[in-house]
Image (cartoon, one colour):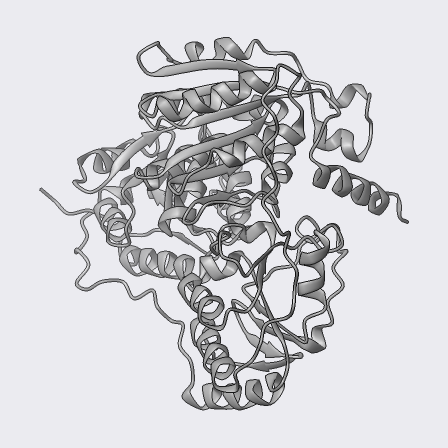
Amino acid sequence: MTYTVGNYILDRLAELGVDKVFGVPGDFNLFFLDDVLAHEKLDWVGNANELNAGYAADGYARVKGLGALVTTYGVGELSAINATAGSYAENVPVIHIVGAPSLSAQNSHLRMHHTLGDGDFKHFMRMASEVSAAVAALHPATAASDIDRVIRTAVIHRKPGYLMLPVDVSTMPATPPSRPLDVDSHVSSPDIEALFKEAVTDFMRGKSVTVLADIMAERLGAVQDVRALVTETKFPFASLMWGKAVLNETKPNFAGIYVGGLSAEHTRAVVEDAEVLVCAGVEFTDTTTGIYSHQIDFGRVINIGAESTSIAGRHYAPLTMASALNIVKEVSLELGLKGTPFEAPTSEEPLPEITDEALTQDVLWKVLSSNLDEKNTVVVDMGTSFFGMATRKFPRDSRFIGMPLWGSIGYSIPALLGAAMADTDSRGVLMVGDGSAQLTIQEIGTIIREGVNPVVFLINNDGYTIERSIHGVEAEYNDITAYDWSKIPAAFGGTDANTLTLRAATVREFDEACHLAKENRDKLVFIEVVTAPMDMPELLEKFGAQAAQLNKKK
């Protein structure tokens, strides 16, 4: 059997831990998909559409470290570009492989289907280059080197990569990789490490310290280093919503989720009043800072970032995040530094009484979070779900996946599919509003077909509540078509054997539904949760008011 360019791509992906390939077939990628089906280490996961496939690959990559997406040229890839842009914004490496017309057709500038009819076959690659770390149009002579370059760049920079694979190039002979692909370019200079340690020692001496962690610590594989820092020093630590559950929220020195001025007072104080604030992989965005309401004196900050590390604005490079964190830990222990004083709530918030009263958002999120366990991967959509769960304390080793920067509604359903398939030992828990669900609900069919068996909480609050919180409480544009959600699972392949469909409109019904979900781990449990249209989490209410004020500014 001839070894081909298509085989080379798949071997490189498998080498880096990919075992699922998401996408939609099209005439220009079918030969390549034959290679996917034949590959001993890869499984094909066909999605309902290309946008969903992109979201699924993104969710998968957040757990596995790398994802793969296959679409056809033009119509397919443009449907997926919203998902690719989200992966780019949120630093998620997904390799997008686009089956394209043959080289002979391109060189002849033919007017072909799926093109713009002008003979230019690079339009869409140029579009993709704006949301990709690297792109390549593959040719036989340079295919292997271009494939390696694109994949390596995507992994190193935690951004998508794009491969335009002409249908004839896919089947052309290639030489298998002779050695593993080197994707580790993060190095530190010993001289810079010494300078940084000296500067850190002078800067931190005699001061109290707080650690603030965020998503880039996870993206760059430095979670264990941050955990070692806060565990060995006992410094209080907080997370931004984007990096929720990166660190163990059950630890006594966990100070909560920092959302700028919208934070709980003890969280705000321990972050903003720290004499030294160690920021580990922190990215301040409007969503995660309560519309830029954070009040941080950056003259007191050691900022350990993805591309550089700084002390009160003075930069040190090349210096990896892991090295910088370890040096801060060593210096802190050598100097015997103390954490910033803080007073956490003296007791856990009591669970609500189980009654037959109508379910409210406040009760919903308290009861739901109390039912999570260490083996849950929680995926939320941007809206009531994200803000409802962001400040709830999570069990150790559970995951929290959302999209607060890109904020594309409908993301969570396909992302749950990808994340759950990336770690089959962790049960997926999906929380999605009715408005968001209507964009990508058809991916429930793929979830059922693949036997993923998550718990799906469909929040039926009759429209776009997050938009109502900002503007247009009763405006028609924030209304949606009312679906009969109880029939959705059956419409997409659900049966009594593989699916349990429930509805909860009272506190008691919801509590019982959560218990049934735990008991039925071998099924998809689909729970329609009914709340009032303008009932919303307290954090979302505050965020909506801040966003409304920002939008009114001239």
